[in-house]
Structure formats: structure tokens, C-alpha cells
Length: 103
View 1: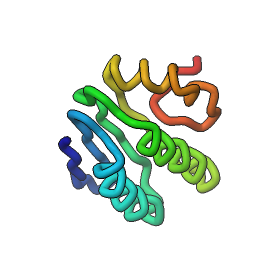
View 2: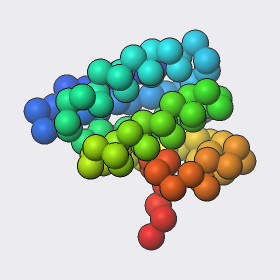
View 3: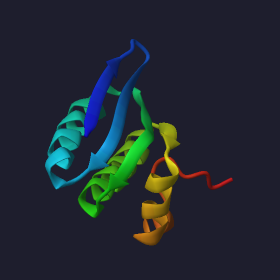
View 4: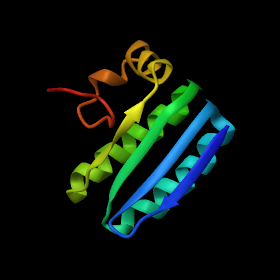
């Protein structure tokens, strides 16, 4: 699992890769908790995610809801494996779930 925060002045960026499990979800939660009060948009790079579990998806869904309440945006890209898991777990039905093109 790779989880990296990339510093920018105008936004936050987080890159995840490999297998994202409950253990790495703890690190992800910490980064998301640090990001939210920044008032900056978040760019997620999940293009290298090979596998992600439901607790990590729940964290992303919660971050999407919190971001929407604060007027912040979460954008980025996810791997096909990430998007397949999102769809199969039903997170594509969560209105504020980040990284889904709903146009």
C-alpha cells in the first residue's frame, strides 16, 4: 500500500496505490481529518489502486459528504479496480461519493 500526501498551496493532493485495507484506512482517515479543516479542495489519485475494501470506501463517502457541506470539492481519478469495487459495493449510489462522473 502506498499513501502519500503531496503538498500544494492551492489544494491538497493524496495519492493511494496498491491494496487499500483496514490497516491503511487508518492512515487515510488521518490524512482526511487533516485535510478537511484546511478549506482547500482535495485531489485524489487512486489510479494505482489494485484493491480497496469497504472501510476505506466508507471513509471516502464520509469525506465526500463533509466536503459538500463545507462547499469543498473532491476530484481525481480512480483505477478500474477501484471503480469496479465502488460499483459492486453500491457506493456509486451515494450522491456525494468522490471520483464518479455523474454527468
